[in-house]
Length: 70
Image (tube, helix red, strand yellow):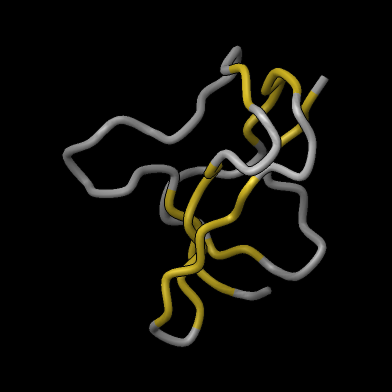
């Protein structure tokens, strides 16, 4: 999906996840805005976030890594 990466649900709120966050399958990781639609991206696996590959507001493309889990 091509769109804008948002790490937080709103500008004045905390990020959904950060390095070290423990996530379960189905947890919301971020929002991608594409064609004026806000799409929640959820975890396919459980694990710990080891790296956030993009910054809030970055444009992302299909297949681009957003996070790494361990």
